Image (tube, one colour):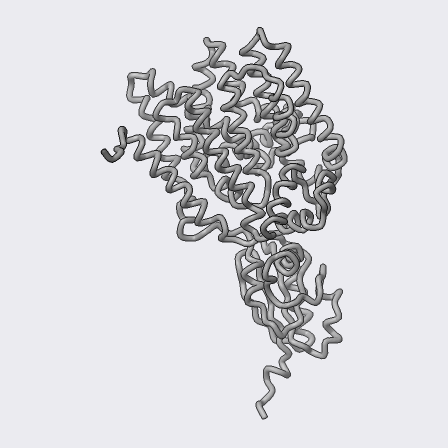
Length: 482
C-alpha cells in the first residue's frame, strides 16, 4: 500500500520545507561577492592553514575553524562563490534541524514547525544563508545547542572538547554554551560538580580564543566608533540611553520577526506570555532562561563594549526568540477558552503573509553587482577601479575561474592619482561599487567633471549598487570614416 499523509500537518510540513528550500536555492548562487565577502576570500587565499589562526588582513574577522573549513573546500574544489558559501548553507540546514528538535522537546506538538517557518521568512536569514560570512553557522549551531540542553544530557567527558572546539568554529557559541551550561547546572543539582568541570574547559577555550584573536581587535578605535550605536547603553539616567536601548530591542524584533509592526507586537506578546506562564514553574523558568540566555549574555557583553548588537552579529540569538514566541502563544492557545486564543494563529498568518521575502523567488536577492559589471566592461579600454570596488574586482580577476572582465590597469582611491592625462585621450572605463556610500557618489562626480574637462564624452551603465562610466574622447567619436 502506498504511504499516505496521516494528518494535514504533514502536508504543511512538506510544503514548508519545499518552499523554504526552493527560496534558498533560487537565491544561493544569484549574486556575486561584495566588499566584505571578497576581502575575506582574499584573506583565506593568501593565508596558510596555520596563519588562519591569527588575526586576518583587510579588516576581516572570522573564527579559525570556520576559515579552515572554507579553505579546505576551496583548495579541494575551487574558490568559486558557491564553495565559499557552502558552510553558510550548512549552518542554515543545522538551524532547521535544531529548531525542529528544540520545538519537539518543548512539546509544541503541531506548532513545532512554526519556528522553522519563521526562519524561512526572515529576510536577513535568506541573505546570510547564501553569503560568505559565518553568521548563519552561528544560528545553526545555537539551535543545536538549545536542543541539546533541552534533552537533559548527562555529564560526559567528551562534552568538554566538543564545546571547546565549537567556540573556535563560532565565536557567539560562548554565549550559547554559557546559557546551556547554566541551564544544565540548574536542572541537574546532583551533577553540578561534573558539569562545572566541563564548563571550565569551555571557559578556558574561550579565554585562549579571546587572548589570541579578540583582545587587540576589540579595542581598536575605528571598530569602537563604528559599533558605538550598537552597544547597549547603561546610562539610564539619560533619555538618549533609553532611546538607544529601545532601538536595539526594536531592531531585534524587526529582523527576527519581520518589518510588519503587528508581527513584532505578536512576537513581543508571545515572549511576555511565555515568561508569565513560567512564573509558578521552576522547569519553565529554566527553559525561559535557556532560550533568552544567549541574547541576555550578549547584551551584558555589549554593555561593557565587548560585543556589538548589530543585527548580523545577533543572528545566533534568533532561535531562542522564535521558540519563546511560539511557546507563549501555543500554551495560551491550549489553555484559553475565549476568542482571544485565536490571536495566536491570526498573528502567525500576519507574520507569514506580511513579509516581502516571497518576491525573491522571482527576483533573487542582490547585495552588489560587480560581477555583472565586469562581464560587460569594454575590452579595449583602460580600466580604472575605485577603491570600494577593488576587493571584488581582485577576487574575480585573481581567484575566480575563469577570470572575469578585462585586465585592470589601475586600482585607485581617486582618478586624479592615475596617469590618465598621459593616455593621449585613450578610451577609459571607471568602475565603482558600494554606491550607497556618499564618498563614492562624490568621487564619481569629481571624476566625471575631470574627464569632461579633458575632452571625454561620458556614458554610464548602472547595476545594483555598482556603476561604470565609459569615457570616449570626443575627437574619436566625431571623426569621419576614411
